[in-house]
Image (cartoon, rainbow, N blue to C red; front, side):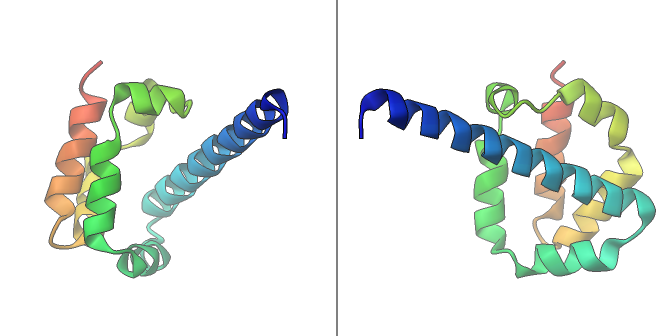
Length: 108
């Protein structure tokens, strides 16, 4: 496969990943806002908590920017009540996850 085609494929897949992540974030936020925490809890409980922490710790402003995630928009969408619900859903490491999210949101 030539380099140009490889680059185009990588770009397309990267954009798809960005859209999938954005859609998942929006879905999770909607579930928190609407109080539909049962389904979200099931999804979170299926996740390996150490893997979740690993993923959360990978995020920084530049990574979010690369993924086209707008921090200002997230700030407007996420309330302290949402973060509290999230912390409870995650369980033992909930406070750590929420602390990381708050750190990211308060950098701007």
